[in-house]
Image (cartoon, rainbow, N blue to C red):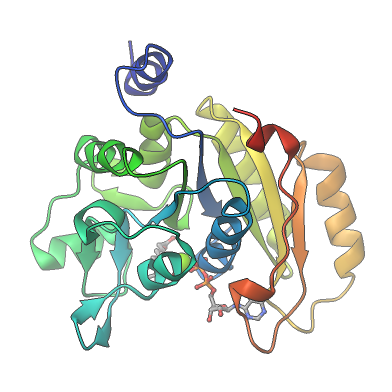
Length: 244
Ligand SMILES: Nc1ncnc2c1ncn2[C@@H]1O[C@H](COP(=O)(O)OP(=O)(O)OP(=O)(O)O)[C@@H](O)[C@H]1O
Ligand SMILES: C[C@H](N)[C@H](N)CCCCCC(=O)O
Ligand SMILES: [Mg+2]
């Protein structure tokens, strides 16, 4: 039995805590709006679930805060969450260098392990009815020499939401990512079209192509925003996300 199968079976048998809703947010690349969309998902879920929490398992790059170095992504997710949890649960790995996590971890002398991140996720779930986990970069970004973000998503065994950063080249990136998600046996629960290039040509035609070919519901379309705030982003949650 592999890790993902084992995790799914354990959830079914209720051996480990399982929130009423959970999803893993990935993107067509780094900087495509995963944090913006994850925070917007948390805000939308908070209308339906009392305890809504975001998780950034691995953050590479910090900003200075009065409390010390922090992940800008984790702060964004915390601002949209309805309960506060210790950083060890919502951002267990915080690395100083804004690099691929495997390089940032190597420089920091940290060894990232998927089972350790999974244990933190399971502990976090005890505090939540709905959890949104934000990946780092795109779906196959390495966490260490021997593991990737995709391995983490597979270990958590939760549906994936794909943020497509609308710019020339995104069709190929979106279709490859959808293929990789499904090859891991994970459902693509939905996707979000986020315009990150203000001058992209034929936006409507690109979105229409992906609607026909991604095979998953479009949860929202975000235009280019001069003030990209999650509170201004409206997403349509599929009804089945709210039923369990
Ligand atoms: N629709 C948009 N319009 C304008 N700016 C945007 C839009 N979406 C995201 N941005 C901006 O682009 C930058 C990258 O977005 P964001 O941090 O959400 O990306 P990410 O995919 O989470 O990146 P990472 O891989 O670092 O986690 C941010 O400065 C964000 O405010
Ligand atoms: C540092 C950055 N903001 C992201 N969190 C990490 C992006 C890793 C990208 C790696 C790659 O695909 O080349
Ligand atoms: Mg982010």
